[in-house]
Image 1 (cartoon, rainbow, N blue to C red):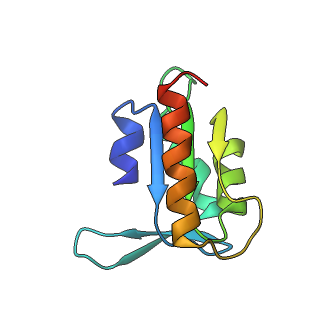
Image 2: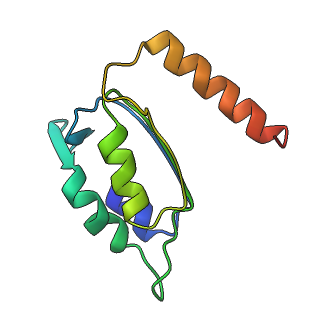
Length: 110
């Protein structure tokens, strides 16, 4: 759960799932759909702040139509956010290759 992630001092969040222009799709405790609207992202992230500091330092949003939600993480104070610049569908193969190369570069210090 995202709320658990931000309140347990997680510093990195990698979201890979379905997105729309206005929300990211999560699974609730019963396996049903829970839509986290971009307007609520700041509220969720703010719940994890300690002494006014945001614990999350890096968020990777791997989802279709993720520009607005990615911007919501930036507006919530996350200093490093990666998302799709365009509000359109992502090809799964391309998203997986990008993710692989990104983390490989991070591990190698680039």
